[in-house]
Amino acid sequence: MLCGAPASGKGTQCEMLVSHFSFAHLSTGDILREEVAHGTPMGVQAKSYMDNGELVPDSIIIGIVKLKIKDPQIQARGWILDGFPRTDVQAKALSEAGAEPEKIIILDVPDETLVERVTGRRMDPVTGKIYHIKYSPAPTPEIQERLIQRSDDTEQKLKTRLVAYHNNINLIIDYYKKTNSKIYRIDGNRSKELIFKEIQAILTNRHNL
Ligand code: AMP
Image (cartoon, rainbow, N blue to C red):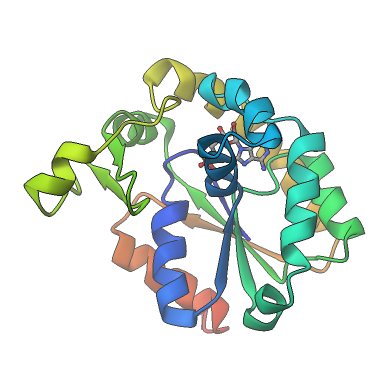
């Protein structure tokens, strides 16, 4: 399970983890954006919350995650959960569904850094790949031209999202402290390669050796 504030680098690390370990990647943000794009009933319900930078109600998101993790293909590959749980209610629901994370990695990034990351973040609507206008520009003019900014990636909405994140992360940690899951808080304010090395070490039990 990979946790962190918006733009803490969860998506980037998941991409690297998937290509290295061939895990399945379950991102609730991606799942919801897809539902919104297809105009499904869940997408219609979720859209206004997402546009405002608010959490979608637990009742909407928990059902879909429970369904996804039952998929035999996902179970066979092992999976990384990205963006879920966001509340302790979601953490409890996951346990009730029989899914206790083996390892929980939390990416810690200072709020000031997140503001710069979020306001410069752009998404390629064709591939879903994430770029940053300054730190990770699109590789070709064609991609550059089609990039869009997520409606919740503004400084104002980030504030709302950060309040929710800080309120919830400690409740989630407190919840998992009472289980067998191992929790690792790591410095997410470094290069993506260095962070990946540390995550790799955690996943292969070489951490702190
Ligand atoms: P993300 O891409 O993870 O930053 O998620 C984008 C948005 O989707 C969030 O700001 C929420 O509105 C919604 N969302 C994603 N995951 C969850 C979740 N586990 N619980 C509630 N809302 C979520």
